Amino acid sequence: EVQLLESGGGLVQPGGSLRLSCAVSGFTFSTYAMSWVRQAPGKGLEWVSGLSASGGSTSYADSVKGRFTISRDNSKNTLFLQMNSLRVEDTAVYYCAKGRTTVTLGGQGTLVTVSS
Amino acid sequence: NFMLTQPHSVSGSPGKAVNISCTRSSGSIASTYVQWFQQRPGSAPTTVIYDDNQRPSGVPDRFSGSIDSSSNSASLTISGLKTEDEADYYCQSSDSRVIFGGGTRLTVL
Image (cartoon, rainbow over the protein chains, first blue to last red):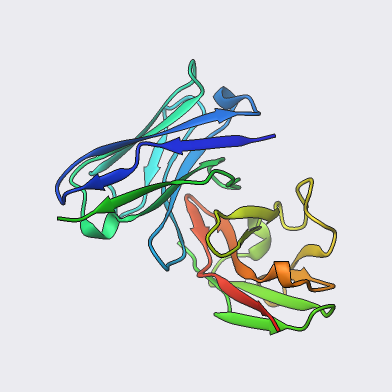
């Protein structure tokens, strides 16, 4: 069974930084591309970023390009999202997802609140 | 990039069937797989259909997915509606990036 456990969210001021983590189990992490998806309060799902299985290829939504960095540690079955220069509009629940085209969601997400 | 358009809301009565559409704005709906996610109030989204018409284990066979090339759309059909089916439903596909539909609120009256 695929298990995705996100952590690292919290309250941060505009311009601040956070690093999200996603601990993965239930599948061979190192052979799958991964993604981050977010959901602002009362809004729909929005893709944020994707990463190849090796970590060598990344992609970002225009809204976060240049501010967020996705990475992974295949030895620790963990996906990361480094978020810098945070904006109020980045406030959302962040979910990690298995896959980069067909995505599987299943974690509870981690809430990021950007506010002064 | 293309867009996926869903109706804002649909409704149905217990025991009946409903259909939720997801129309692709450009390119063929059949060119990449479509997934469907269910999000109950206050909960995280979970997959109910993947790869156009496949159900994950644990999802009842009341849920089915299909694609229609003539209308360039995908559909999620829920038969034998139950009150527990009341939720938001999102379709998802991809080109170079993941694309979600705007979501459909299902009300079971």
